[in-house]
Image 1: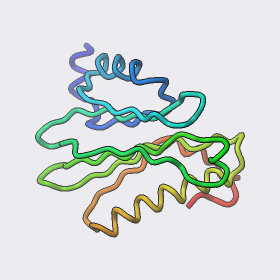
Image 2: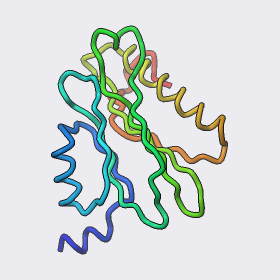
Image 3: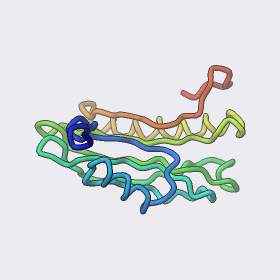
Length: 152
């Protein structure tokens, strides 16, 4: 039964609340993913984000980067990084994924606003280079309708 389910895996799976690379390696193997990338964020709790994927003729890994969230609040209390992974999909099209896990609701709304501005800056830089680039931002944005100001 598990073999049949593996045929229907998403090509790319973003994960939040990741404990460490060893755990993700085991999970990837059990689920049937051949490749994965895990951040090593400055968050002192050791909670990170990851992406699992299966390379194929239609999905080729190009590059990955880990982006620290920059802002005054994060100098003293670092948060999880944003994981950027670039793929080539289909016939040479570029797909960039951003896996996020923004500060929780116990933090001021301002912290999520800072995280959103960091992500927005990354996305706009990619779009400016090529308007044909496809972008997916995924993860736990930890936002609720009562947040003010609303992350952009």
